[in-house]
View 1 (tube, rainbow, N blue to C red):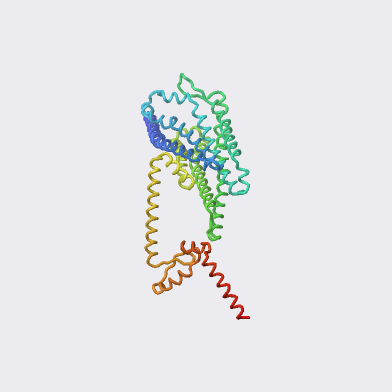
View 2: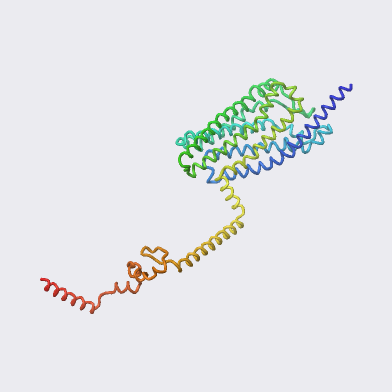
Length: 425
């Protein structure tokens, strides 16, 4: 009897620990991360659909990925965060299910959750393939990665995710008498196949292997390209530098994604090998809570990676923020223009001060410094000025029509020339 009581106490303490852990991890931390992630992904979409950003296939994939992230977080908030924030006391006191939990059990949250999660996984694969093609075939990439091909690929990924998750819609049904969901006859038959033999390869093994191979190839390319730039005098254009940062950003996004999905892969394999033992294990439920939180962290922090690595993303984001506050932007621009004008005035004054003391104009209209003993030669320099620097009065004198005196002078000079010629002969 005492052994039974100790086992019951151990089970109750373990259940209390799991409920408290889920309240902290899913309730508070998950809610904060989800709200931050929704705002961050909305900002990402607004930046990526701007005219200067929406032309490339990479940004189209990132936009679709941000949309899936928002949908995932919108499902996570009621299914996990709000559920434990509202129902923690109910669960601790062993009361019957409350109204919000009954509503969640009636809604098909599991099929929608798995559909969106699968679309996130395969959009990440498509994003990695897009970057690999741009790296390996830069000349053919424009013809391969067109806007039409990108949109068709995204559409096929969503169709595949929906079709794959159709069995989850038929797996369970809600029983009003029990106020719970139970497996249907079809669900009993397909549960083992959908959860073990198909789920693990399609959701984890194939994507992880594909992403690992693609990213190893991309990282090798980045290392080779960096060594090549070091050998060629370190010269690099802005376009190459931008491509390098975009590639590095996407590699980081994929690595974070793989690390966040890895704990759930281990847990699903554990559940496939030992369903009963894993269900009653305290470590299993603790790791499951952490694994789900890591997925939320991944979908919520991509915005920070885009800001950190993407220079053009940051510039477009700053312009977008300034457009939201036009009055502040005008004042900022006016202050900036006034500061530039004052700095230019100071430079001009300094040049004039230095020019009056030790400068003069040369034949090429350039300023040159002269020494004091060279000032005596200024008259010679002024006499040797070109015609374009002659005063207007002198220039008008040259352009005046000849007068009578000038004609007489010309005749006299002509006669003198004749006399000189006669003397020479």
